[in-house]
Image (tube, rainbow, N blue to C red; front, side):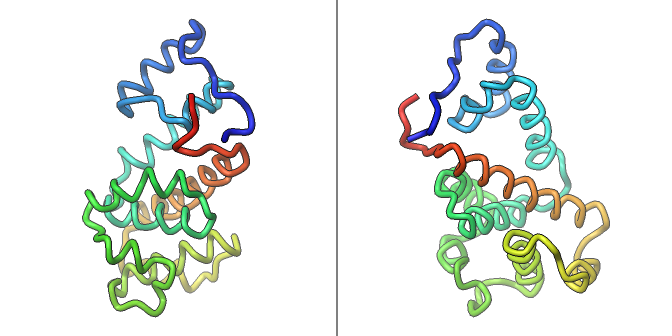
Amino acid sequence: MARIPYAALDDTTTKPLVDRIVKERGSVLHLYQMLLHSPPVAEGWLNYLTAIRQKSILDAALRELVIVRVAFINGAAYEAEQHIPIAIKAGINQAQIDALDAWESSDLFSPMQRRVLALTDEMTRKVHVDPSLVEALSGDFSNQEIVELVATIAAYNMVSRFLEALGIHSDDKR
């Protein structure tokens, strides 16, 4: 259960933002309902995550693979629940999802995916990244894609930390 109540969706001051969230996301998920306590933060968050998920050129399957990996490392069940179906729709298979906790010993990931997962793990667990990890990715990706990959990993670490700090879960009552 969330540690503070969710924001009301019928507040006249947040109505335009609620309408935008519904238009862009289909509904107001618990995450955004909590963020609505601070409309400026909610709006900035929406802009940033929309750029990450809908405006970047990074491959959708790869993006979702790292989001789910971040969620697993951080123990962010809500984040994983939201993104596993998206990952599968984008082309990651259930066997890969099931193997993510032990990806290093799995043969289900390509060499490029393994390099990306190594970066994801290092950014999430250590923050400081061995320069050779980024250098190795330069053979796989353009500079724009590397920036978007790193930004995606960073963004979803932010998401999981927010979710877990406030105890946001998918089965919460609104």
